[in-house]
Length: 115
Image: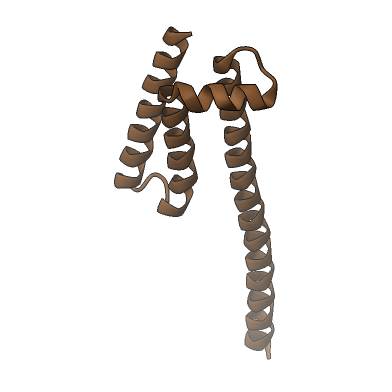
């Protein structure tokens, strides 16, 4: 159990470092990094707090606290990925609308040049 918690701690610290490095290099926007940082901090806190982990596992009806940790981590990352999927969908819709508006403007300019 302790080995899994130590590995989880290391992975959360690495995730935080990766996100902060990516923000610094402008590979990821700040507003998207917040959810990844929050997930990494939650992972770090839960992997280091055996009281909280035992309390959560007891309330979820799980016999093994590391299993509760993995379940919570999975849920958090699913939420983060869902949030990013929504953002990507909105961007794709905006891109299509912009392309359609540009096509209309080009059509209007072409018609004016012919007159």
